[in-house]
Each structure stands twice: as structure tokens, then as C-alpha cells.
Length: 228
Image 1: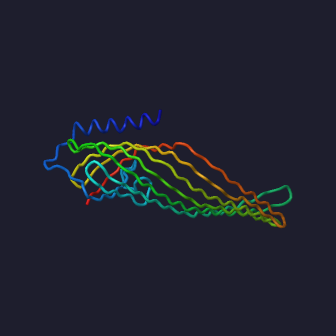
Image 2: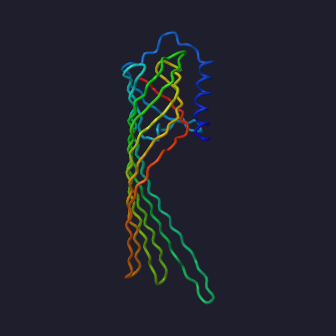
């Protein structure tokens, strides 16, 4: 149901732009042009496109283009917590420290087919491949007066798949386009990790691995393309 609503949003936008867009006097020629793309988020601010750090495309002609998206994200989060436990005859202080780190890098390569530009508007279809890999770890330490326990969790995954998308682009200028697109992807993921716990002379470690596959559906994305 959600996917039908998102697809209806693109079609409604296409119809609206077809009615209100003004025809540009000079025909638009995208052959041999490059473009940088930025996403317009729900606060109407510019953000990276395809969830990526970089997204650009090259037009072989008005009807065909290749698009490349490269994404990278890294984050470290540390939390310290102090608790005081009160018993009937004593009080105990418990310190907890939790450190989480992760790095994710991904690639998307897509071919886009555009219909003829009419009244500054063109619809497009796309297909391509994607790849993503991630490494994350978490270290949690609990310390009491006579006890220290450490839990270390490490996991990594890599996934690849196929992208399918449909969209519409409105050329407000010969070098500026506003687009909306909806996409889905089929992805296969392989993951593995280790969960280990130690306290004093006691140590436990568990290894695991597995695979997952299936379709993922994106929300409708609005973007701006700058051609040069």
C-alpha cells in the first residue's frame, strides 16, 4: 500500500508539472553534459542524493545517462552512566561505559533512460547495481566495587543487489533540473560477527554468520541536478 501511494505521488507531480510548466524557447541538449545531484529533504534543505556522499551522472544523449553514487559514513558514540544502588545496610556504585563505532561505504551504478523532453519535462526509468559494506563494534564495561565485566560485540556485513527506479525531471533552466523518483532494490547480504564476554577468569565467546536477501523499498526522493 505504501509503495502504491509513493508511486501515485510521482504521477501526480508529473501531471501537475505538465500543466503548469512553461516551454523553454531553446531546446534542451544534455548530450555530453555532467551533473551533480543533491537531495531535497522534508525540511526543504539540500542533502546528499541516494543517501550518498557523492552522486553524479553523465548524459550520453538526451535519452540516456549513467549515474554513480558513492556513500561513506562513520560515527563514534560513547556513553557513561553512573548508578547508585541502595541496599538495606549498604550503598554500591555501578559505573557503565559503552562505546559504539561503525563505518559504512556503498556504491551505486545505474543506467537511466529518459523520454523525450516535452514542455521542459521528461520521465525516466532506471536500473543498476549496488554494493555496500559495513564494519561496526561495541564495547560495554560494567564496574562495581569487586566486579568488572566487559562485553565486546563486533559485526561486519557486505551486500549487493539490483536497483529499479522510475522518476520525472522538470528542467526549470537548461542547466538546472528538479526531479522526483521512487525506487526499489533486491539485495543479498552476508554477515558475520563475534560476541564475547569476560569477567575475571571467566570468558565466553560466540561466533555467528548468516545470509539475508529480499526487496527493499525507498521513499520518494526529491532532488536538484546542476548540469555543466
